[in-house]
Picture 1 (cartoon, rainbow, N blue to C red):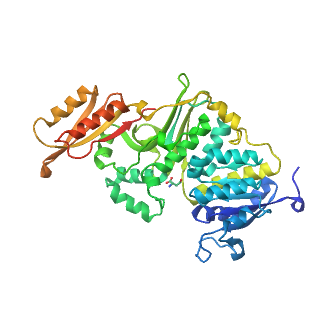
Picture 2: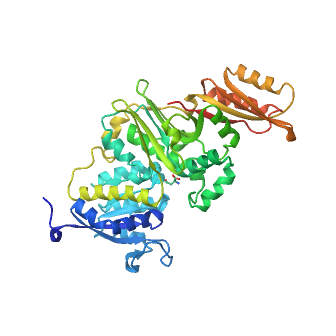
Picture 3: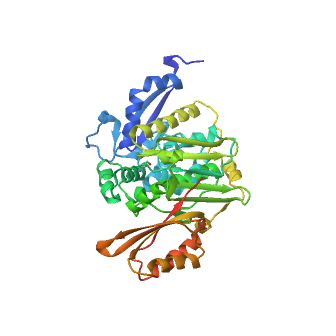
Length: 445
Ligand code: HSE
């Protein structure tokens, strides 16, 4: 039965944080409100938004009376039903989130760092207080990956999930690939376009995508993985040598999250690093600021989701989908099929799972060395590789006559992290090796 206009319940929404995403949510909830109200059978009221600076000029027009610089007043307002935490960071965000959940409000969040570090505590708090914490916008922006894992692919176990989870690094790698420019050349443009997070390390050293990988690993495997137990590498050291040689060999370089679970040994591996992937793979065509996630389920086979992983509108789309779920829950609908507050469901998913050490990774490798261009140098290097049991699959040398140096680029047959780590240590000690050797993994799904 559709409620008539006057009998519809009014759901009040408060926003904590009014930056790019917060303003996007406000803008779309204002512009599309009647359509959403029609679909959800309620009236929606944007009650208030907490900002850091009341005097700041904003693109989205909001009555002054709707803004506050004290986010706690939103959390403490008993008339507000749904709180959207969009301030980022972990300290204040954690306090406000827990306070809102304790007050019985539903919290919607885009905060991957918070979930990665405090997800267990937050889910337990939501459960204890009979409410919900929704976080579709925390991973891959507008791609509905959380709902896909939790609902659409509920029939599956996932031996492999991998993908591109950071739009900024994908933008930089794409432009390096297309324009032949260096990382330093492109990162300046990415900054100017506002793509790089204020804490640049999140995008450039892989931490943002690692946070997202931790969340996906929990949803798929019921196990929280600590960042300190993961291999996490970013894109800063990638050069045109790497991109060009990868292309010659039929690969593209992408920053990949890789989550594997071997259901026989019950070992889970979660890692984040740049990798050479075959150019023929659809994932290799996920360029610019787009994200892509490939899920291999034991029932469905492989499914690839591609879309905008960041940006105002895509992220607002995900936040609003969580607001819609929150409205349903407030109207008494049962919780989602699998709900993160259901600790038992996740304990069951993760039963007996052991975390693989990064040193257990097996792969073929790409190796770059800058060496003195002298007789016997190549022989010495191949001797080290041979003694370490590393089999060379291909090799190319680029001479730099002006500096009497050469760049050697190798790919190897399958080896492992331990062997390659030892190999790098030995190569580094050679007097003829000029810069630190650089290693990338080759990922064939
Ligand atoms: N810095 C992130 C990215 C924003 O580039 O993907 C979305 O999490």
